[in-house]
Length: 259
View (cartoon, rainbow, N blue to C red):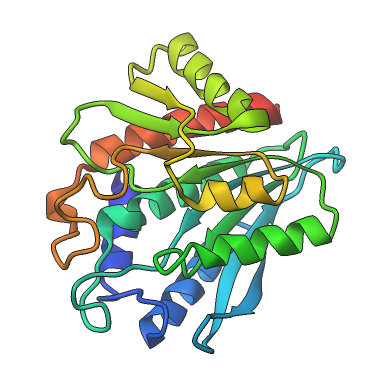
């Protein structure tokens, strides 16, 4: 919990991670350094925004013995608000997902994995979900053997208790089903809504459009929170224990595929 809190505090401390700002690039560098400190191989993947900004996604990899399959955990790191260039703290949306993803990376980096696990931090989500689209297109073009990516987005809300909303479609539905089975098997106690709703749209949709199976993990959907996309999306308005519960659930789910 202390590490999750520190990560959220650090990211909120950038003030904004809005895509055209220097703080956006500084937060990408922060994520790079964190992954590197865990011993991952880390790299940037660059793309250009609709309005001409050079932006970057941050990718890290924990090696695996069998490279015939790849798995991933993904979170977007950019933010937006009613004052995006000066104050878009994005504590829940999506420092919470980043913190969970970093903890999964830190813990799994200490183990010998069956398959490589990539940690994927995507940019430019808040203006059309473009960073994940660019990443998925490039990954598909490279012919990488992706089996599944877990998209963690906004998992710090306490307004609905232990509710977790999953979303996947078609060939990806096994991922949501696996999370449900892990939750039951370990007695984690989350109240899971395993949705298959084409009207829910997030980074995972961009991946599925490129043939990469993916599931969304969230506690509140877009438009449901009074804080998301405002200057009030700060740590005082979210729950670190809910982030911790999510981290445990997805860590165990990823672990079920890795050992």
